[in-house]
Image (cartoon, rainbow, N blue to C red; front, side, top):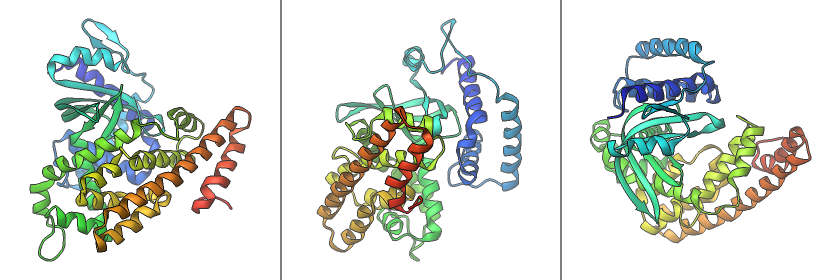
Length: 362
């Protein structure tokens, strides 16, 4: 078990990150993340819904707390009698090595700081890359990223995967997507009436989580491959256009390139012929990612009729080729920041990339 002083400091830094940067999330997203943070703190299962009044009171108190600490700097971590930079994960994890815990620190959406401390469940290698699956979390911030890469190691946060899957299913159910219905049926989560059986979800959620963890691993593996969109370009765009449609487009391009790499998520699904994971992927494919690769959705519905996995493979390669060209265009436009104003580059990105997607001025 980590020293309480270390744990307390990590959680304080989590709270400071939330106080500083909770505004990077939309209102709907922020409410969902606050609800999940409440559930985590109170040990409430993802499928359980606490009384709204209780959660609203907790949110009010949390916002007051954030206001009181928003100007604090991140605190150094007490390690073996000395103070360590909170982003020095190597030193912290060396200290935790014999305690079966892992510390994480990095940056998420719009460069929001991410910190967490969690129990290690599994250490293994996938495609010659180190993978760590984490279980019970002792400290976390608002984002709750289910997967990330830290110092070349793929980290899967199993608690966050549980929340992610429950949230996605609950969010998509009202629309009754055919792909989601298909996935739920394959996982045995539908009742005789064709609707979600909540008791089955409770009983089988952990099985679903463990079955779907490989898709999170292979998404991160895809990101680790050589890509047309360099991480330096992503960082420059986030720094120049934080919280903008340009940042979101860049992140969507990066995600699609990771998923469509031959050694990425879709490549893995096709190789394993995993129909349930494919159906969930299509269900969760929304927003800009769906706009970037309509071929995947179209191929899925043809696949349901034919069972031909080659349709999915062809859609993957087509989507990757088209998205790769967009990444090259974005990289070239980003390079103009060396000589052009951000306003001029923004207009160029809107014209060359957003307008063709129906998202910017013609």
